[in-house]
Image (tube, rainbow, N blue to C red):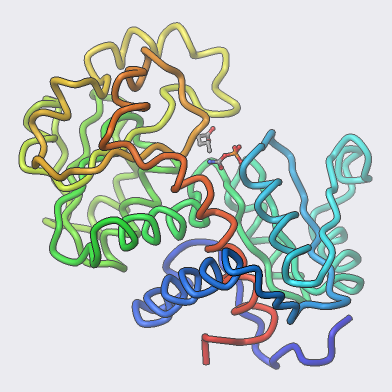
Length: 311
Ligand code: CP
Ligand code: NVA
């Protein structure tokens, strides 16, 4: 295990774990690391360091970006699934945390309950990253904020419209609104609202709409996510009916500002939450957004393990 770990362990369980200034610095660093990588510059500050990646749900982008990111930073990433570890056979999370964190330098977890990552972090000797829970997906928002900055500059004072389920992505967009200072319109059917406590904390920084057209009006960025998240597969049909009028299509995009962007964390279900026309259209930045998972998470790993640029 590394000896350069700072005395106070920093975790990244939600966007609220970093200050506004730290997040802004992290986004700038991600852009720098992307430039260095595109120029073919080798930068290996995490040589001999290991990232443990615990996946209790499926993943393409998160797994590939963390694993490739660790390789590029000179380190190693270890994929751990419940099928092959004792976690799947009921070993308590606090025991797994104490054991795994004595052998690696940083841990990434994708799981169901947010309390699982909180418990892991409580017992961990090394930084813990939330790679998606039922409640939050903060790594995705780092990439999303980076993508907006690259295409349009600062998001401060802008209007973002999230159209869809009040789920983990919606909650992370709400945290992003607080941390990056923009207004968030949320359009969702009744019964699929985001967490009430979080809504109360955001106050008038968010507006809940039932009408997608109104939610999209004058927006700088339209965002959506799948109607049925991982773990909700059995609700697919019920949700398809509930969300039928919440699709992002050309008519919805036409309500937004002319230079509005479209984002989706992916995977996307074409002709459900978004039409193929919008997903593949000129305003869509989804492929940059997916690539930026790599660069943003490299900046995050660097910050958590080395302590830079976060002081
Ligand atoms: N957006 C995202 O987290 O994708 P994966 O589920 O493929 O990791
Ligand atoms: N809300 C989706 C996001 C996938 C990246 C899910 O949790 O499945």
